[in-house]
Image 1 (cartoon, rainbow, N blue to C red):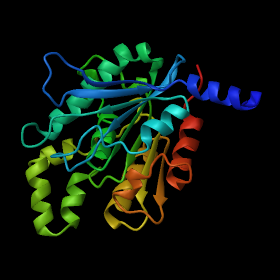
Image 2: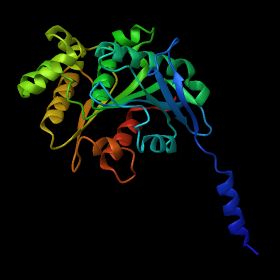
Image 3: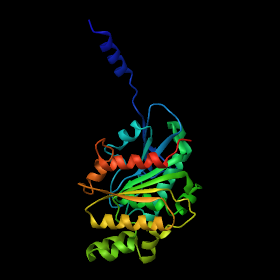
Length: 278
């Protein structure tokens, strides 16, 4: 005969509620196959902060399913986690990708209450190419204005190991072969400047607080992160960079969300500070 405590433990495990999840949700109509998102939410609750995650992949590959530890980590802390796909090169320009992200945020704003989320407490994050898109949407308010949203609904931005917050500077500092690849992706000099988050940093734009995570030993992502932090701070913004030791471009993303991961601890300390319970 089982002891009472064992029976109670078994019952509690059986009754444990799984996160709510909805996959491949179109965020525009009619939708391109890549204009979809995935939602993972705590089993219950309301007015919970929301993370919008933008995958990387050089603006030409990648998928919203490549989220590793993040949905579990955020849901366990009472966040709703949304992972976004967007159209890719060569079918779409980087400007159009940013507009796709803005459209996804519009869908989140309109529907996330159905999953217990708070549409006024959004966190925008992304890795690599997704870091550039996250930073761009959170500094160039034209993208959210195009979908009739104010930038003020975004309460925090966390780009992860991006190298194109200042595209002309990146092009000027890498070897010619790579510089030509960036030119192919970002266009002429005017387009390069327009797609650079640093170009759009200014006072009184409701730019959210930034925490920029980057690999400590990578000179390009470190330099680009420090460049964006300096621009944000010069405009009176709340911005800092976190240099992740013992990481590379892949592991800083794949390990984000692990309990023993130092960048993860820095991330949640930042979010605890800037997100206020309404």
